[in-house]
Structures are given as C-alpha cells and as structure tokens.
Length: 72
Image (cartoon, rainbow, N blue to C red; front, side, top):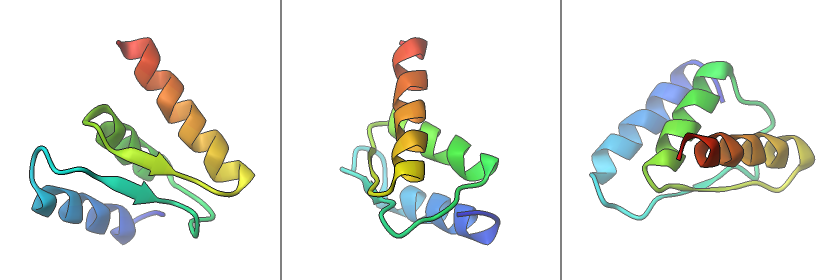
C-alpha cells in the first residue's frame, strides 16, 4: 500500500465518519510504505482494528499496536 492507495484509504476512512467501527483487512497486502504505515497508525489510534495474515504484515501491525500502547 503506497502512493494513491494511501490517499484512497484516507478518503474512505473520512467518508465513513467519526465514530464508525473500522476494520482494515490487510490479508492481501504485501507491502506498506512509510506513509501507509503512518496512516494505519493514525487509524488505529482512532479505534480502527488492523487484521493481517502473513508474517510481514503481522509484524507491521504488531509494531503499530506497540507504538500506540507506548503513546498512551
């Protein structure tokens, strides 16, 4: 997930509106740019649940979750 796809995810998130239950399914995602990771982190801090299947994405999700816990 990079470039225009990051912007598309942000647009979808904004259209869902504040307070919407958001679940981001990353099972078919094989790579995330720094910009994408930052957006996923922002979304998680706002309550989004991140789902991952493969080891790389699971590691990225675990890192985002750990960063969120440290910030609290």
